[in-house]
Each structure stands twice: as C-alpha cells, then as structure tokens.
Image 1 (cartoon, each protein chain N blue to C red):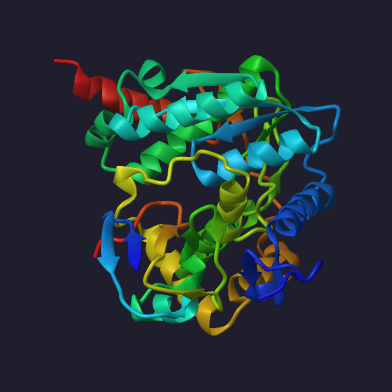
Image 2: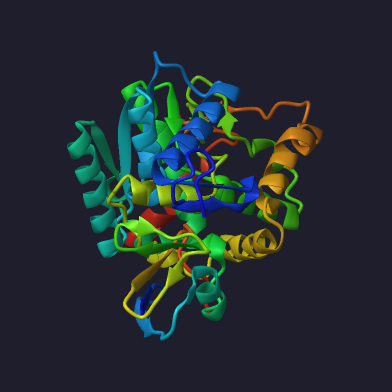
Length: 68
Length: 302
C-alpha cells in the first residue's frame, strides 16, 4: 500500500495486510496525532488495510512540527 | 468498530470517551460539545454577533462552520500576517469558505498596522516569533472587534491547545498566567472585548475529523515559523500520556479549570489603563504592541 505522510510530505510503500493501529505503531505515529484517511473515509484503528490501498496520515497538531 | 449511537461502521474512535461514532453522529457529538461550552460559560447569546477569528486552519474554520450551522450571527476576521505563501494560501481558504456560505469576512493586515509583516517584525525584536505574532494578533483582533462594534470574539483554541498552554505555564510556575487561562474571558474594561473558546472541550483530532467530514477546505500545512516551537514539545508529551492513558489531557485541563484555577485568582485586580500612544488597554503607560511597533520602525528606518 501507499502511505502518504507529511512534514515533510513523502510517500512510503508498505506490503501486506494489517490493522490501522498496527500500521501506526510500525511507523511510530501516535494515533492521537493523525487522521487516517482512505479516499473519502476516515478509518478507525481496527480497520484492515491492504496492498491496493492509498492511505493518508494527516497530522492534526496545530503549530507545525517539532524540529527533529 | 461500530457507532455507539446507530451501530453503523464508525468513522472515529474517541478513546477518552470510550466511544466511536459514524460520521453523522460524530458531527452531532461535536456540535453538542460546542453547545455545552457556550451554555456553561455563557459565551454569547443568539442576539449577539460573534466575530470569529479565522486563520484558514481546521480549528477556526470548523468553529465558524458550527456557529453558522447552530444559527448564530457571525462575521469572520482574517489577520494577514504576511508570512509568504502560507498567508496567501490561508487567506484564500478563508475567503472561499466565507463566499461559499454567504458570510462576511473582514481582513486586517499586520503590515499596514505595524509597518512590516511578521517575518520583518521578528527580525526587529528579541522576542520569539510566536510571541511577537501572538501579541500582535491579540491586539489587532481586539481592536478590530472594537472598531466594528462586536461584543465578543471567538477563537478556535481546542483542548490540546489549552492543555499545552497550561502545561507550559505549570512547567515554569507562571502563576500570574494561570487565572487568565479560561474558556471565556469576560470584558474587564470598556475597550477589552470578551474572548471565548467554544472548542475547548474538543481534542484537535476531533476538530480535524469534523473539518474533514464536513469537507471544509482548510490549510493543512502549518506556519513555517512554528517549527521547533516549545508548545509542540508540550503537545507531544501530552499525546504520549494520552496514548498510555486515554483522557489524560482532558483530566489535566478540566481538573485545573474546575478545582485548581480558583486557588490562583488574585484578589487585587490588575489596574488597567489606556495606552498613551494608541488608547488601547494596557497595564503600563505604553502598551506592548506600541513598543513592538516602535522597535520595528527603528529597524526599518534607515
């Protein structure tokens, strides 16, 4: 699947089906800090995503990002 | 995951409420939280026109949308900070939002008020950028509301913003800042307009979800000056706590508001005067905004 991240905007390719909450854990993204978007829908942590999906992890934190 | 209300597939899980909602019931939940905030703190009445300070981001546009949907009379105020493409794009979002809903949008420019846009203001002062910008915004928003005769200003501050501000104040034991932290600040001087934060009961993930589900076109990119801001470090700490213990942010803020804040109220009122230069409210002789403008002028002048 293609996962779109921001700050900086980038895409990562991940293979295999998994739950959204596991995907976030693998990418070290706190669930409280993003919306998980597939097309027109928001996904909850138990939703399963697979190879054909394009998933956007849209940050929700106002005030930009922390300096790495 | 199923919606708590109707059993359909959920769009959003709210761990701190131990609940999940489908899109329509989440929208209903969010509006109910805003109604509760307005009611509990008597923020404004249907007879008053609310000036909504909008930045083009998710929170302020979600707030404006809710207030319109709830039937309030509103006017938007966009403050053009002059921060390159970020300001241009965020202004366009606000204008498109207002036009699509037939609402009035007022626009004020920092450059015309201060003689320079925020990036130049920042160079003229030793204050951190966010501090100079925040000071300018508070001043110009209040002045705009006074000029146009609006009794109340609503801002899009959410639960995360408020919890992070509280965390910062507590970390430095800024006890003088604690009594001022409130979802509603009444007018304490004829030239100070009431300020309210109707989204303070909602986490920013919730306001973002509302904006997404309502198809509000907001600016996702953040202000380029915010990178590395201390408030973000505080938000990250709080979000790590939240992940380990859902409800941590809510308990921190609401516990303070309900139980701790009164202990920091000072009996002696701060003496408010009018600035010798501009006539706006200050605790000194000349207000902080005029001092900042003076610094900018000295730097800009050859």
